[in-house]
Each structure stands twice: as C-alpha cells, then as structure tokens.
Length: 111
Image 1: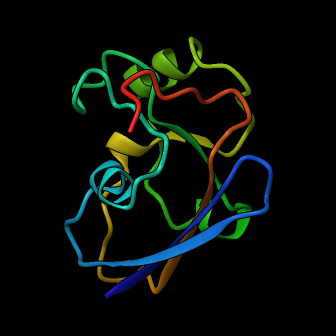
Image 2: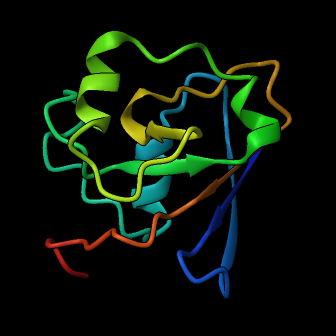
C-alpha cells in the first residue's frame, strides 16, 4: 500500500489516504473529496486534475508524455513538479506520495 498525502493549496489542510498499486491518483483524490474536477474523466483532454508533486516524490514517477505536457501548458500555476493526477498510477515501489493542490484550482462540479 502507498500512503498518499494531499496538501491543500493554502497548506492548512493535509489529508492522508492509502492506495494500492495500480490505483490512479485522480480516483483517490476524488474519493477523498479533493477539489480536482477531472472534467475529461481521465482522458487527458483537460488540465482540471493538475497537481504539484512533492520534489522528492517527483523522481519516482515516470516522465510525462508529450500529450500530458501539452495539457499542462493550459493549466494555471504550473511549476516544474506539475503533473496531471489522471496520469499518475501508484506502483509497488512507492511507499508514499505527497501532492499539493495548486492555488488556481476551482472545482466547478461542487460538492
């Protein structure tokens, strides 16, 4: 199991969940009530599941494909550790993964 830590945009809220190898970060985030819209339902046709991966964890992820990089060009508040949560799959070699919700995230689906 992988411990996934979600940090709110303001840094005041930290939520931890557990995921299994093969789980997608977007699904875990939405099940935890994180404000990641995922408008395209993980088809990499939007950037509404953009997250900032902790620099220490970033190296554990496979490189982003060109299509993901293109979608990140459309996201707000992008940095060198930006990824789309729909493209992050937990693996057996991950003990933990920490991501921060970017400042510019607004979930239009509401709660």
